[in-house]
Amino acid sequence: MNNIAKCEASGNYTIFYTNDKKEYIVSKSLKYYEELLRDQGFFRVNRSILVNMRLVKKVYKKEAVILDNNERIIVSARNKTKLMSFINKYA
Image (cartoon, rainbow, N blue to C red; front, side, top):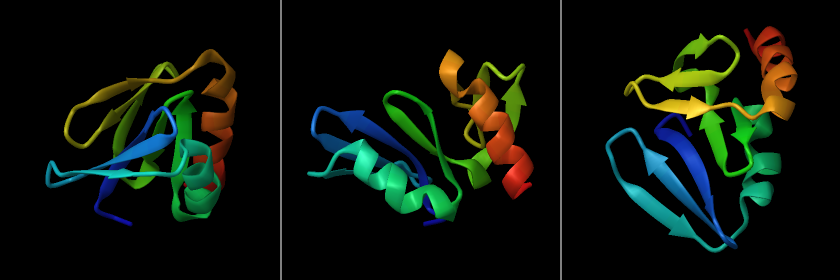
């Protein structure tokens, strides 16, 4: 779990990106993994990306999260308040 940086939707598939730059494609939707990984510290920042919050080094103005590898991922407008609640709950 700690090696997964993010999960990205690709139709009915999900692409897992790891810290060591590997990609794994699985045949289940992102929604399935969102429910499965929520208690493991993962948060859905927008419609297509689920992020491992343990690897977030910075939240930029509640508009984006910056991962350890300096990748910037935009947080959707509807998830900004959910993000802050998630951080307060697990921080």
